[in-house]
Length: 76
Image (cartoon, rainbow, N blue to C red):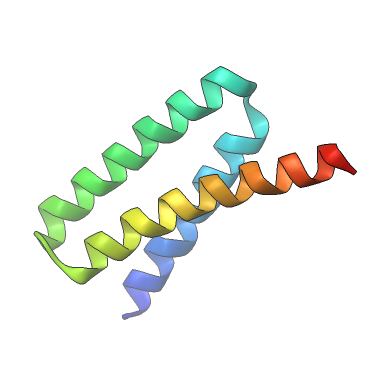
């Protein structure tokens, strides 16, 4: 249980850093590669499970949330 929470926090922090630190086209490519690698590692360790599905959903929501926040701030 604690390992799952740590994985979510580390992946979220890594995607946050990649998405905010790199420039526009490169950050999506790197975020996609990081997401695929993390999903692959999770699949190897945990096989198909709810954890894998929730982790993929988490990664997508982190990137979409950051882009939504960026758009909101730029409009203001």
